Length: 334
Ligand SMILES: [Zn+2]
Image 1: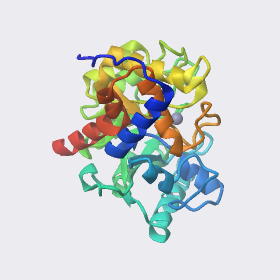
Image 2: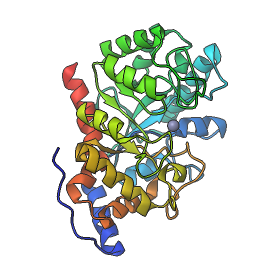
Image 3: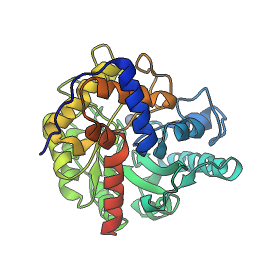
Image 4: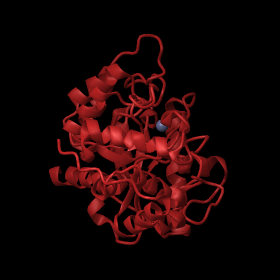
C-alpha cells in the first residue's frame, strides 16, 4: 500500500493556519459521538448551541462539519425492552432537535448531503436496542441507523465485548442473523468494542463495509480498546477506516495531541492512508487532551498531524475523505 511522502516538520503556528485552510476546503466526518445520550440525561435540546457539551451543531458547522455519526448507546445495565425504550428516547431527542432548531439534516444516503449543512447519521454502539430481535433492524434503519456495532464492552445476545473476561467467544447464532440483515440493508459494520474472537468472526462473516469507528493503535498505546497491527491490516484490506479517538487513556503517554499524531502515523504506516479516519468519541469520554475542549478545537488536532509531518493528502483523508469514500461506496453497492 502506498504511503505518501512525509513533509518536513512545520512550526505550530503555520500548522494551525494550514489546518484551518484544510477545514475550510475538506468535508469533516466524525465516526462517533455520544451527544444524544448526554443531551437526554442533561435535558438539553439538540441542534442549537450547547457550550456545556463537547459537540453541538453550530460549532461543528463552523469547522467544516459534513457528517457526524451519533450513537444510540445504552448503558450496559439497560437491557431488553428497556434498551429499546432508551434508544427511542435518543431518536426523539434528535428528531425534536431537527423540528425545533434545524440547521442540520438527517441523511439517508451520503449523496443527499447538502454543502454547508452538517449531516447526521445514527449508529448503534452495541445492538442492545434491538432487544435481541434482529427483525427490529429494519425499523431502526428507517429511523436513520446506518452503522451497527454488535456489542459495547459487555456480553449481549449477539457477541461478546472486550471486557468479557470469562473466555470471550465469537458471534452467536443471533449475531450471524443480525449480520445477514445488515448486509441486506447494506449497513456499515463497526468493530469497535467487540472482543477479538468476535472481531475476526464478524470480519469473516460480513460481506459488506467494515470499519472501526473509534479506536487507536495498540502498538503506540497497549490498551485492549486499541487495534493491533493484524487488525489494522485487516480493516485496511477491506477498504475500511479506523477512527482515531481523543480519549487520553487510549492515546497513552502524555495523552496529548502530539501523541495522538503517533497513532495516526502508525495506522498509516501499517494500513496506508486509506485507513485513516476520525472517531473522536465526543461527549462519550470523561477526559480530553490538553488544548482540546470541544469540537471547535478539531483544527488543533489537524494541526498536530501536520506538525508531526503527515502530508496534506493523508490529513484530508483522515479528516473526512476516507469516511466519505466508505459511505458512498456502500451506496454504490446498493
Ligand atoms: Zn465507545
